[in-house]
Amino acid sequence: MIYPSIDSIMQKISSKYLLVNIVSKRAKEMDETKHYQMPENEYKSAKSIGRALEEVEKGLIHIKED
Image (cartoon, rainbow, N blue to C red):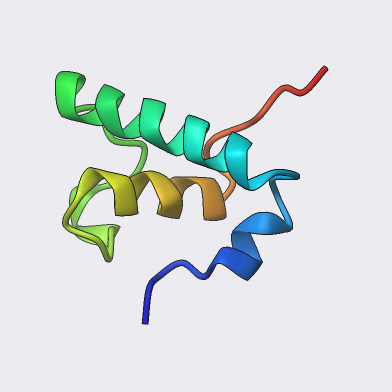
C-alpha cells in the first residue's frame, strides 16, 4: 500500500495535475539542496517523491491558488 493515500492528499489539493506539479518540484528541490521539512527518520518513504507527498499530506507545503 502506498503512503500517503491519494484520498487524504486530494482533500488538501484540488487537482491531481497540481499535485503532480507541486510534488515533482519539491522532490527536485530536496534532491538538489538536501533540505527536508521534517527530520529524516520521521519519513516513511526513502525516495524524494514519497517524502514530498508526505509533506503535502502533513500540511507542510502550502499551495497558493489564484
